[in-house]
Image 1 (cartoon, rainbow, N blue to C red):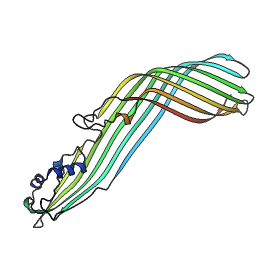
Image 2: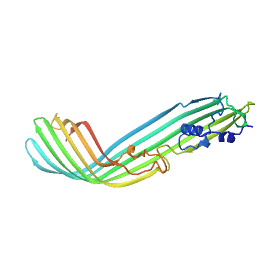
Image 3: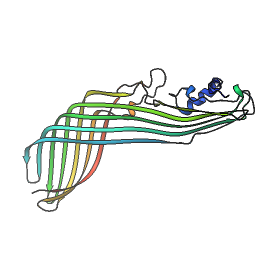
Image 4: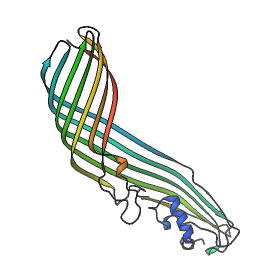
Length: 288
């Protein structure tokens, strides 16, 4: 009779390390025992076909409410001051996925317990890890706007400065699932199949850093816009503009990954940074 437990205890440290590397560091070697020949003549074949997927998304949105005070108005220019409230949100996520099919076969073995002559390990492994961050800015805003006009052409410049609090949220999740079968065959041709399955945590997201975290930090958010356009009719205008936005304090998903390995790692600690964005837009405006 073939005993998978006895065969599993015959694995050398090298074979246990190989099994751990193939199924991930959070899967115990006993859950996926591997056999290496203890005498010459054995043949081991292994294949690890699989796919890896990494996705990163970034969403930036906001709103503001301002009061306008006209400071000066001339034939060709207008100068205004603005003040009000601003909300800005930066939402990002880093998703890491892996799907592997592990197939390890050893034939022509000799000298194994219970006369095992061949082993066959087939396993499917799936890993999903997520690092998500959300930044919400709430604060007061001051701004100045200057516009020049020459016949139907116009250009305006807007500078804004926001001061307030940045509420930062970080969410880390990860899991690994595996399912497979270990088949042992002895000299008499008797086979015994042992199912293997179980959940585990991820590689970068483990029990030491999985969870949800939040904090508040002071932030400065300046923004500038330059726009040029053409007055098509008295009520209709068309323009193009360039905007640059800067945030002094945010959290981003890639910075929340702990690259250190060992006891107590990966660990979580807030790692803040700054953020900037720029863009070009086209605008059609109708006034009535």
